[in-house]
Figure 1 (cartoon, one colour):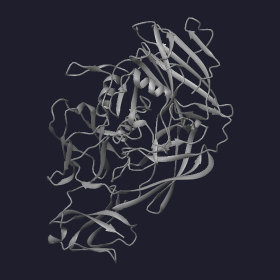
Figure 2 (cartoon, rainbow, N blue to C red):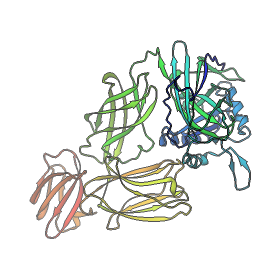
Figure 3 (tube, one colour):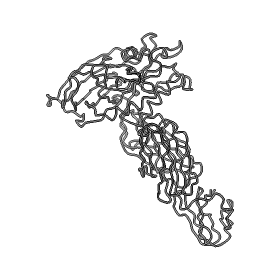
Figure 4 (cartoon, rainbow, N blue to C red):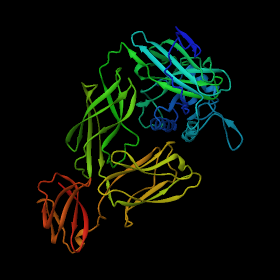
Amino acid sequence: MKHFTLLSLFLLSFLPSIMAYDVTTEVQKKNILIEEFTGIHCGYCPQAHIICHNLEEIHQGRIFSIAVHSGYYAVPGSDQPDYRTTDGDLIDSILGTANEGRPCGVINRLTHTYESGATSMVLGRSAFGKTAMDIMAEDAPVNLLIKAECDVLTRKLNVTIEGYCTADVPSEKAFLSIVMTQDNIVGPQNGAGVGDQYVHQSMLRDYLTPVLGDEITIAKDQYFSKSYTFELPKAIIAPETNKTVDLILQNINLIAFVTEDGKNNIMNVTSAKPTFSNFNLPLAAELSTTILGKSKKYGFNFFEVILTNKCNETLTSAQFDITINGNTQASSWEGEVAPFAKQVIRIPYQKGEVLNNNTWKITITKLNNQDVESSELSGSFSAPTTSTPELTFAIQTDYYAEENLFRILDADGNVVEQFEYEPATPKLYTETIKLDVGKIYCFEIVDICADGIYKGSYKINNNDGKMVEQNYSIPDVGCRTFFVTSATTPVDNIESTNLDFNFDTKTRLITISEDAQITLYSITGAKVVSTFGQSISLDNVTPGIYFVQINSSQKNILEKIMVK
């Protein structure tokens, strides 16, 4: 792509009267850039794409990726699009990845020393997460802020990079790079199982600066700024085949980073989407599921979803219709999602009675208090498992226990308990926890490296030793499960007792053989109806899952029933 640079301006903080800076002066932790080298004929490359996507979602605003299509596996067939770029081929050669297999990656352009003594920047996909976590713990010597705006009619893009140096750096000479990527490019990809309908994300489209960056001067306690104007083409032309791929403006991202010498050591990185003018798009948004929101059971008092802004106006509020098992309720959200950006949000809802199997649907009805064309997200979930308040967790860790969060959350998403374990030695840990009666809890495991827990597992037991749940496969980003605590241990076969319990589902009548206190509880622990005697009618009870507690001189038992 040819750059039409209309303005290039560089300012240092010794000219404070010229401009005010928005970049923070507080010491920040380093952000991460994953330059992932890939190709459409690489069967394992979708796995690397997923790892990058998951890391970006878990560490929103801290990790950014660039998918560079280059090398043998990126060569298209005669009827396929060509995603290669001149700049991609060049950076592939500069970073030493041209002769490596695919997928591979470079993180913050740091060189690693292996056990053999060999050194290289190049990493396999399994090392992306662990390497990123180590770097993220370090202080960044440079803070960065990117601002960008684009006129859709002229396709002129104005970009300003602000920086502040918080620490001593190896040299006052550094190099600033700006990269443009594009999301939502639909095309072929081996290994994905969707043919030509794979949705490519974060694909390199062009270096807006020279590939090794523009030289800048930085010094401790000093600001810097650099501004550019570019004219963006309507399509990106591949260097060898001259095939074109449309450049859709609302799908572009800008990534800015500073290196020591243009090639080595990214001192910090940031990213932003441009704001747009002369874009006549209506208010619109869409919902998608989070990576941890795909558990079969569910029990939070909110739906956790990704809200993607599909318009050029910042979204500050949204209203929804939430339909659960055919019953609809209204809900709302307030926050801020930039134009064409995405964010994980929580939409509160009232659960009502929960069935064994439940259907749900969320419909967007208004954005920024304006009616919009509806957009829906739907799914299903099972009821939380019943447990006693006192539980034992048997947790098997792997060699990287420090990467994993093991915690119990309440129905509002607050952390109630958190377990921390030592790394290096896989070990079976046992935790006994006493929780409140009649409440829903979530046991959550999050792998911040997004590479799963190798041979990791958990088992949850009631206080009588009976198993609530077990899981011997904890993949990728982790998992969630939900359980509701009951007053006593549920019995497996109440009919074997001498109370002769019977529930007639047609007449909705519970009967027992002697007088006792009979109480019906909802799955959330709320008392629904109670009486003393040998029977109780459930005529006025809405359908759902309930617990029947019977207290007599002989027994104190609890049974789960389904009211239809």
